[in-house]
Image 1 (cartoon, rainbow over the protein chains, first blue to last red):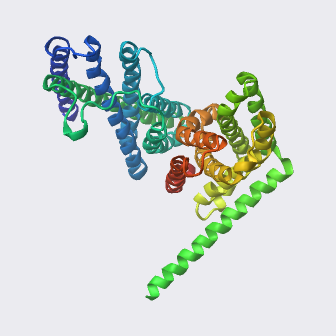
Image 2: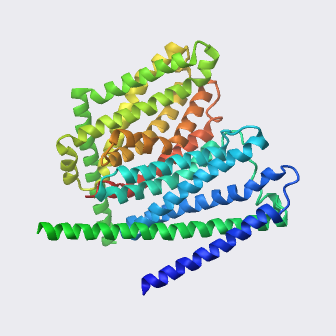
Image 3: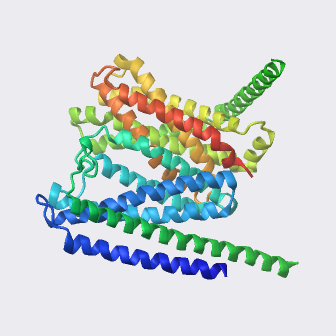
Length: 234
Length: 240
């Protein structure tokens, strides 16, 4: 019964996500006019910034789940941390791909070592290390080590930001909130962006749910296998 | 009142035990190192090799060398740290001596503090031996700014030792320890290295302590944050 309701919830989530995504794609490609200065290239902004914010949120979830794992020692929190880290690395890769596609026509270069780009790249390296640690560590300590790296990595974020900030900034100042509370976006653009952000967050939560349930099934399978082994040996 | 003074005495005696255990562990590590000189030798030779190889990569342009020398020195130290930690970790796993140490400890963070101090001392020795060589090879006068450089290097080496020791203890329990240590350690240490390289570079350029205060504060915050964080979570690293 519980399985059935969880599945129904999952299908509902998927349908809502599908609708919001379709609306977002409609708004981006058909409804919203292109930017006066940057032209059609600006449209990648909706995907780029949405992925970036979702990525930060995912890494925040990793940190919270890691703290909760060390505190409560429950496998569920470990599964959440692992799943959020995998999805976060996926979104981080998207950010690192869409960024240069935008930068090439606007800045005239694929890459520059500006603070925001550098921070994203370092974050990608830290969380790839996190995933590698999960593969390499011996079983009983794997989750605890990963949790420690999940916390240390997130604590490092403001420090990385602070240190790379000392460099020349090429990245456009955040257009969402500018001085005096005004935004650099027209109302149509802001609406499109918000719909797109909601679509990405829905996607994140959908993937998280599915990935956690896979991790839990795998855990159950391992426990059952151990039991069978014990019975056979005993 | 009586309860307060009692808890104060308990706190004093437990911190005294903590200090004794840190010193005992440190003495043990240094004694082993004094007999073999294994860790220092590998770190020093490796650091010198990195500097020499960079020298060929940069070429003979004196002005260019002046600009990049701080980066070369810190990269050499960073790699030497990884190497030293690997050697130290290997010594602990041989004969399972780490288990014995853990069984004897009252508070397991003592192990972290002792290992970190030992690593810091090895790094200090490497810096003392490598910097004069760099000064001679690249014709840079480090002596003129010795006070400011000491402060910068102390903060940088402390940060490297804290983060390095934490990740060395984690990498010990992975299949490919030699690969995992640098993969975990290098990205986390990036803010520290940026600050250390720029602070050292500006000191060589003749800037004052005030000009580099931002970098020094950054390194100080990095050290403080990760030292306290590691003290809190270290128990879960070595827990059985």
